[in-house]
Image: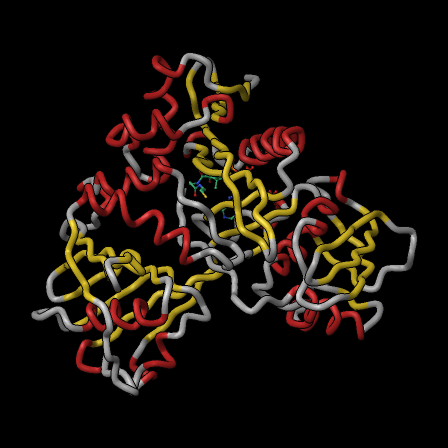
Length: 399
Ligand SMILES: CC(C)(COP(=O)(O)OP(=O)(O)OC[C@H]1O[C@@H](n2cnc3c(N)ncnc32)[C@H](O)[C@@H]1OP(=O)(O)O)[C@@H](O)C(=O)NCCC(=O)NCCS
């Protein structure tokens, strides 16, 4: 039987059927968030795979944007990739990705990103690990700061309405210079404010605390509790004072014996502020996967820490329009990237180029891993210096 991939046309009547494969594969009952999701979806970017009229697989793309060094680029945020168990491993996801990539190309979005349920899935489609995240646990008794923190401002609990008005601006300021950062669309804030029971994982409702100095909101923390654990859902700060004071607040909540936090940046300063840094247990994992959809456009749309040029040969079997050799000349003020007939200095796949794009991993590391071939060994150091950035990529935004 021929399967058909097509956009959802009659949203009101097809929505529930469209959410079924997701419920069956990932266990989310999207109908619980129906009013929110109804607003967030770009209907022409929601595809279903139909088998005799029944939707058996889904994919959706959000039109988002992502900060890269020196710029903000349109980013196609792929999500809701689900093939129900009755139809798995017949090439359906591959067919959906092909279809979606053609659409992304037609729209001219230079990069695409996603959060992967398993890290084994997306490399084959040319995605690489663009950002990492750290997850933390610390016992409250080991949270002393050295030197001690002297807070200059105040922390104050706020209710949902004030959170919704004040926090988004603090969030945007926190990430003003951070590669990988994404503006949070309203629907994500509405989802946080809705604080649906089924998203709590057995924890309490959200608590919202703002940090203020001279009546200005410079930071916030959103946390939950479960038993004697305080779980930081998000802590954003636009100044050193705000950052230190908010952690001090989290470490000072009585009756809690441990603090956990997820999705912190890999260059977070907290460890360096603690008297007993080893007590901060950190585990690192891949976070957002990135893909360069239009290689010359993506490479010429960011700035580079050091001026230089590189000749890169790229292998991109899934997006053959990217295949070939490119010369990149860039520096702190901008860059140009064009096709080249010169001999390549570095040879790599789309997925490895994507991993280096925001500076999350160096070319040298990938060469040592056997992923990048350095025809000119000196080019590795040059590439590392050009692509590095003073902040590591971080993306505390899910879509
Ligand atoms: C992941 C998922 C979408 C794959 O769909 P699918 O239609 O079975 O994938 P395809 O048949 O197109 O597979 C393409 C290739 O990827 C491999 N692959 C796909 N999913 C894989 C997985 N979870 N683990 C290992 N390999 C996987 C296949 O073996 C196949 O490899 P091959 O080309 O060497 O034969 C599907 O299994 C699913 O819905 N899983 C649960 C929900 C989920 O995790 N979604 C992803 C959200 S980010």
